[in-house]
Length: 152
Image 1: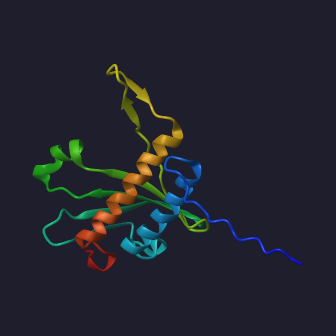
Image 2: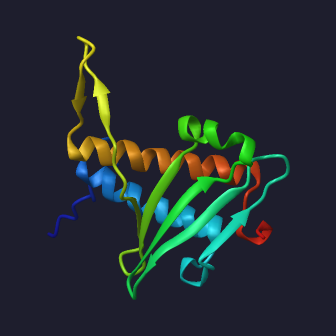
């Protein structure tokens, strides 16, 4: 008699693990596509508008057969440029078309230790934090109503 084994339930990767980071890259790719459409067809620079929200500037920094690198940032008026340096997110994101992944490639991760000194995060933790931020920011932008069809 043959015994049929039940399939084990898969468990989602733990936060801050390498597997979770790879999964985050996939989620970010999906969200970038939902926000911007086909990234390969983006203009070199475009601005997305959403009611009274700050315009979102999208700049294509580099294109190749398999990747596109984008800079995502808010577009501030001249009177707000000084404030931008303190509060505006500027994310450099590499889209891998063949792997269907989007990764933040600009890392500046430092944490304050208990004694008040700055210490560098591990590379995995740094990438996890930056890509988690991209995930949350794109979800926020989409919830606010930003979309590729509303650009200029």
